[in-house]
Amino acid sequence: MYKKEKHSASKKNIVLIGFMGVGKTTVGQMIATKLKREFIDIDQYIEQTYHMSIPQIFEQKGEPYFRKLERKTVIDICQHHYNNIVSLGGGAFQQKEIREFCLENCLVLYLDISWESWKARFELINENRPVLNNRSLYDIQQLFNERKHAYSMHHLKINTDNKSPEEVTASIIEALQDN
Ligand SMILES: Nc1ncnc2c1ncn2[C@@H]1O[C@H](COP(=O)(O)OP(=O)(O)O)[C@@H](O)[C@H]1O
Ligand SMILES: O=C(O)C1=C[C@@H](OP(=O)(O)O)[C@@H](O)[C@H](O)C1
Ligand SMILES: [Mg+2]
Image 1: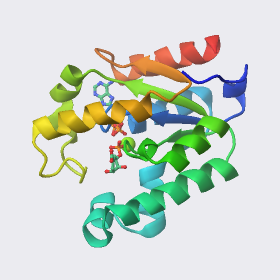
Image 2 (image 1 turned 45 degrees about the vertical axis):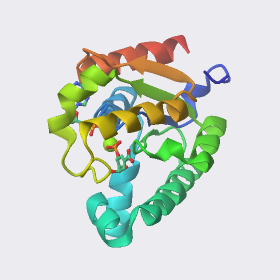
Image 3 (image 1 turned 120 degrees about the horizontal axis):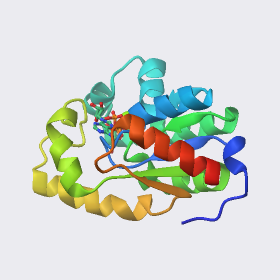
């Protein structure tokens, strides 16, 4: 866990990280509503700005191009917005530049999930996530484990197992109050 300044959550952007499908987009929106802050989902922002869906960007431009847009977008948004809730895509924290920027300037909140719980959600999230296409469940589990290292760099962690999005949101609000 990284050290954070006291009361930092009251002014810094709160950035949600975690594996695909853990609930960053869903819960991010709910926290923003509860805390009366603006919500920005980086993938949705990229789709609106570049008039292409994430699968289209991967298919037509390739993953490295997407990662470049992702890096530029996360850093631009976090530099120019204040006090917002920002949900990243699940691969963003693999990029050192994004990780370092967010850990230095934002409150990084990691939504954790066990592999067992994640597997039960697989059918629900398989569509529209190009990184999961053509990967076996075994390969996805490898990716799930590989990404834990980047996610271990955070300020606050919330376990989401057996919790509804509303319950995850309530746990986050409580953790932020103690923060
Ligand atoms: N705590 C939860 N319990 C059950 N389903 C959830 C939970 N959080 C999110 N979901 C569902 O899982 C799917 C992926 O959620 P999403 O917010 O898009 O995740 P992410 O942005 O982390 O990829 C959605 O269908 C959402 O309704
Ligand atoms: O983990 C990844 O590499 C990705 C996760 C997706 O976001 P979610 O985590 O919101 O699904 C999206 O950014 C893109 O499909 C790539
Ligand atoms: Mg998302």
